[in-house]
Amino acid sequence: MAWILLGGGLLVAETGGIVQLIHEDKRNGGFDVDFTGAETAIAGGVVALSSIPFFISSSKNKKKAASIAISNQNIFLSRQSSFASMTQTTLTLKIGL
Image (tube, rainbow, N blue to C red):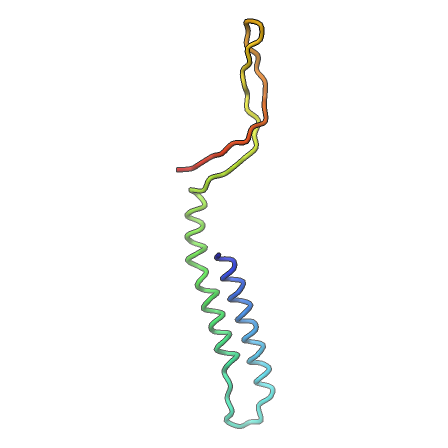
């Protein structure tokens, strides 16, 4: 979610900046002022800045997240009245509380 807000906000801000530059070139020196591009760029910047709390909360939740890993574990098998050690590939689910 945070990356979507950041990327989308930067894209909207860039588009607004380009629109504002295009409108700047078409002015005739009169009082016809069009700030549509500037307003769009500012709105995109606000959306991009709104991603900061999402990045902060995701870093806090990352420490609590569950992880799945493939690892080798030793298992003990009984063979003819003795035990043998063998490794087996396992799928491990680790949940941090």
